[in-house]
Image (cartoon, rainbow over all chains, first blue to last red; front, side):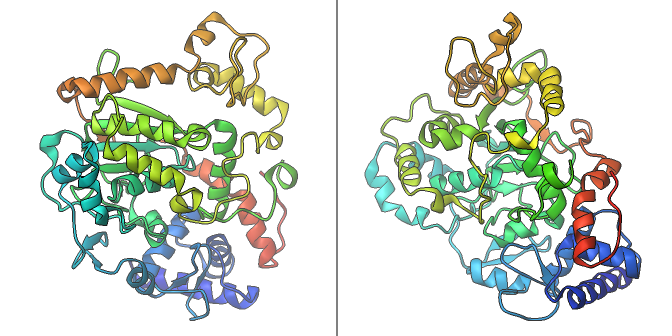
Length: 260
Length: 193
């Protein structure tokens, strides 16, 4: 990314933090940049994408929820490297910054299917390491002959991260995701190891297909698992995401009352 | 819904509802894993043991981040909509609301009846909870193994994808958040949609 863009972002984070007396969120960075420094991006999602990119270079620290950003080391804020080392021992990143096993154990897909489908409880007990909450990656061997690559489609805010963690708990294997790390870094930071992985390290891949998401990775799948949520709740939750650029932060204000 | 059915069948599709994951996670996960593992019945399998262990461990075991106080609560957002907005959804998406079981039914209790219809057309009633029948067929298909003859889905390709939110709409949807950010930074502005 050109240094003039990075520098505008870093400057805006600093000046917004000076005014607020606390690290700003993505929307505050956007407003600060637009008003005082000239914004090279058009909307808050683009701001969040650039903030995530700068964070991955360790030039910005983020808090646990990924809602606030700062350059100034302070309690509760960590760099990408610090977060990664804390939550992914035995793993590193490849040239695309997706997670790869370095010293961590990986799992053979055929073996996994045998264990899960079996009625032999002893087999499960002998392999209890599979369910030690590490959520391993597959060993990367070609799994196309099984014709069981699964595209897990959802509209954002339908509970996909929640169901992914259920699936990971049950299989012991990380789910992948086709969303670009520009927006998925914060999910990688909370333990979803398979962000931006669509290859044979994972066999269930989350996507928002057929909804277009900039930068999404293309992949083929043999089955589709579709998670839906009623429109009454998903619209409100999506509005929160749009207006906070955060999966966890609930706005302090109320749409129905403050912005009818 | 073209997946696994219709004139141009592609990869089989299983539909899971967020609400069922809250109301009865064990049953919902069993359905999902029948589909994932191509099994007609999970009785006695290790995957069934894992499902029961994970569900018994409770919410904390699957929580990735702090949840909002409305998460998982049925009808928590009813008051966020005015009559006109609810009518718009009912008028335009009735077939889907029936298909996914989000409506009332004259003869069946429905814990996910978020949209109330005073009158039900025979066409809509025939669609009620249609996703469940669709799922049964999807499991039959993968258990038989014939789905491997179907076309794979090519996710995120330009030919299959469509834009739900264009740049203008994204900008408009974020106006409340931007207005609040301006207030935090003490920048005077008037809010207009």
